Image (cartoon, rainbow, N blue to C red; front, top):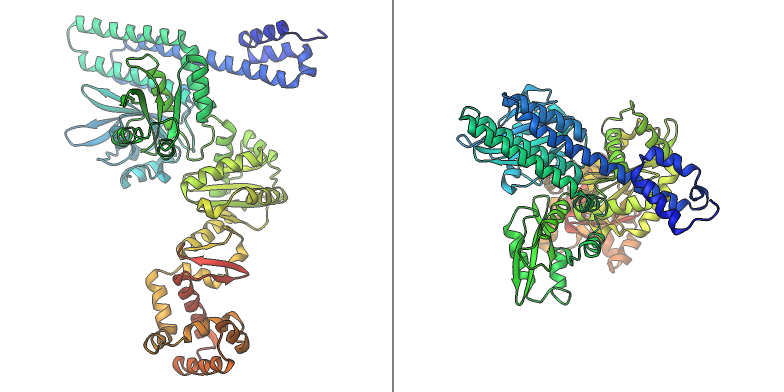
Length: 639
């Protein structure tokens, strides 16, 4: 066809929904849209991919529905649980799955059945009141961690942490199962950092329903046959409910995918307003307080909403509140185990839309610290590859990982650089977002709870650094950024990464920051970095033993020998320049120099004693918070 009309576009959309992505691509090859309308082609391919994802999700739901009938025919509860665990690993592509149960008598938890767990140490560990299991027990809602050992959002159990570490597990997703007989959690786990999107959570929740059903059946297996028939009826109701859910999936599934795919609050709100007629507001508690000063929220509306969110610990468990003459439905958003914000809707209860509002709040509660899209496969792959390279310098790469390195032009004999950020968590979230926007997929970006790292070809990373440094005010974000020197190949990435970490640890230990927040290796003398490796007590001892007599002399006689000495070191012992800086006569400076010699004694300005004095003066200046120049960089202490 030479022209493309509305009817043609509609016909192509229908084919995109009906055909498989492969078949539809072949269909597009002969269409005029392929050559003349490339943007429309991309949209049509995206529709085809989403339709395929929808079909796969329906297939998974149907498979779970069939499972609910099959497992109720199994006489052995362990066999049924094993099938559920195997299906969980298969459907979510997880490395392991296990069921953990609370013993109410002892107060400890233990794994009752597992699939994919290698070590007996993890299978036999019994944490008590600490660990991720008990965090889920407290909030009674699904939770996930991308890096278990680094996550500080819950209280850790040292014994469990050791078992988790030896097992090699990094990420976990847990769904609570609250049965009358006790509390259980269905877990899936991976031996790499992973963000589980809302589709994963939805599938695991359906499997958790089966865990509950099997548990109930196991307890009643020895009772009368009528009770067994009743259990089959419950299982049939579950199957019918899942079938009905599949039929109603167009709206709910769209919300699930869009909350994950369009996780910017304004777009979610716009989608619900357009498709369901629900007017909602999504806001953090901080923004909500600002809104109450002149936005959509009444002046007296913040306090009751804030009070409700802070006293609840379950995401997506909403409640109707009265704000004067106005009734609203409030569903809390919990992130990192702490209240973050709310989804507020003008609903008159009871309302069927409340379930959708709670679904949105729960999905918004499960977001990575990076703030990036949870289902962005490339972001996850890039982050996993980055931390794999910098933690071990691993060189055995998959084809996909090698492809990511090729996209970033990181080759074995090429020159590369590494940029590492550390600091405030909120600042790191914004840094991660900006890095993704600016890099356009040409760099490896690694994101964790306490770091954001960027690895790339040297000239490309330098260009990125020059652009990024103009966009981000690191001082305002309370973040430090360190740019490494050039290095060859990616095998040295782990070594360079450790040097970056050491530098940032050094300035954190000393409480130092520069005017810009950006650093290179030449920014701080190695002698000053030695101070960072000392404890506070050791630094105090160094100052007292080296220049303590001068400090006491100044204090007892109201003199200024120490400031004079600091100025002398800064200006290569030029009495005239020091006199001008201190606004005193040059003879005064010379007299003070003689007094310094008398107090410190012969040989203080030679060899190791001179180094001790220099370090002591640097430590004293850093501790005082006074601006200090090291290697042409102005530093400020105790910021």
